[in-house]
Length: 356
Image (cartoon, rainbow, N blue to C red; front, side, top):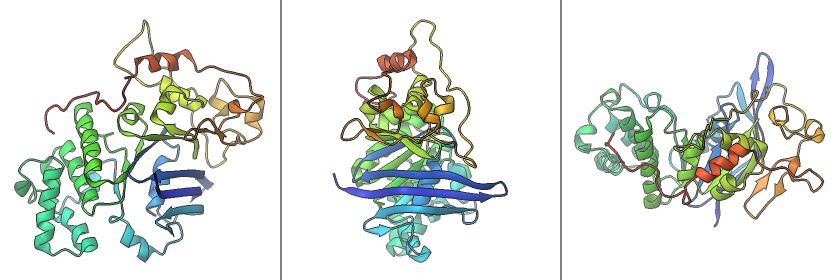
């Protein structure tokens, strides 16, 4: 597959009264055409900051891209003038934000909000933009699109508002769609519908998706590859099967062990990851996860680990993969979750229920 996006050694910081918060610290990843890459990790791991940096949506001040490349179609977005970035943002790269209510303008009709990028980026007439907006409302599964076109955000349910936000993001047939925890504010039935909708739309318009989430259950159903983030760095990356069935980083073990499932084995309990994420005002020396890991080696507190290659698609940033490191097995909680996982991740866990 050919790469549509390549991020190299990205650093993003925020100047605060206490000093420089190093929110993203040397992130590398790529996105292939037509694939879905999930970026997972706890709150504060750097997921949203990384993807907002791709669209140059980091508020400056206090935030700034300190270094690195964001290569899209031969252009380095990190260094592109704002005027040129405005032509890409919303047209070639679109974003679905976490809360649909704060993403929509309460004083404008839904129709006008969908028409706006069509008029700006596609140079459509108002009549053509209106027709396209109604088509998009129908595409995302909203009934009576001609009526809905004239309504305001408060007249829609949460799931319906999220469908509208998706319609706006897809208006210009973007080459990359960034979804920042798009189902967090929705109940599980509506969440399943939105995830199925996104997969269906991806097949129809052949866009590439970056999906940000802290929910590994969501990842299993939507992603082709997974990047696990911790402390502003990507600590493990691989295919869905590699991350779920052959995880190698202790942090990935912790995320899988704390994942709830619909089955139980005996007195099974959710296993929490001890401690808290690191203070990125003063990033720890060595492996950022060492203080929370039961498997930390002496070297983890002294030197930052390099990436070790497990396969052509699987890379892990951990000293445990050094040839001289002791052999350790994932904890029992991880093995239990693996036994409970579906054999085919692409099969939907929930079928479509009541339309939102």
